[in-house]
Picture 1 (cartoon, rainbow, N blue to C red):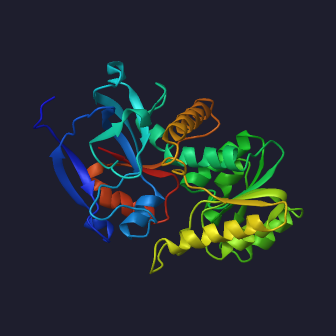
Picture 2 (cartoon, rainbow, N blue to C red):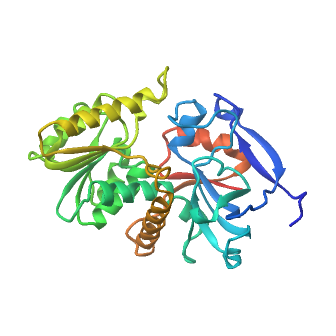
Picture 3 (cartoon, rainbow, N blue to C red):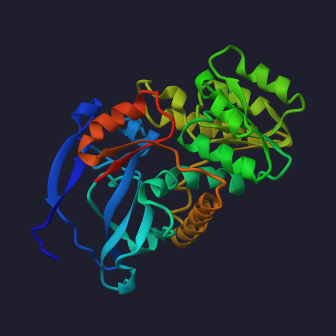
Length: 344
């Protein structure tokens, strides 16, 4: 490989508006022992990057850094100790940061093969969103056929995958979303509820008087209490974000700590309901091999569900990586359904 070869990366220099993102050219990285260099074919804009630019993501690195939570691309080179045959393979990786670049260095153990029949952009929409949805549905709530679940933000990145996976599992799904998304939700067999039209919890109770078996809540804030009260005996609340505090000031850790405290208190009560806070990175620091095996198995299941037609890849827009500012602005506008994909 030519050491002088360059690629583009996007840098988040601090708390800036989208237009404050910086584009720079850097040398293509070299794979070290146990690593691969991936030529990125698609990355994307998730809620995490939107929070990071505000300095509100609870465990983001210090500024400046390259954002980009996940990526799909082709292995360009392999380092010492890595099977050379991996070169040329299309893979997906969950990286948390660093994905908004033309080439990314990744531990070989962290890449997951992408089936040949799935395009890079389509696969990209299913990485962080698909893993999050699959693990919450099947590993945390353990939803089965005949159960009733509530998905808040049913038209969002994670929510849209969640409702499709839940329907494929045979569950009845009640999904909250603004009215303009209701027809699309009904087409998927989802019972829609307008989150802007008054007492959402009361309208959900009217649809499920005996309570629901699971609630998936990315909003947090005061509404998390309503989500807990919607549960039937034996039900599970899965909290996985604090979107309600998106524009709040002060500590970025405090909203998550409050959620964790609520979860602990609810689980300490003598009741037959359960709550958990889902973090896709949980367990990596203590059991990296187990974490990687689970991630590989679950993402493979997500790709298989896509190939069976049980879930779709919802691409809101495809934009060049050099237009990351426009892509971030579009994703934050609330006017699109699906994921904004960046193409280096």
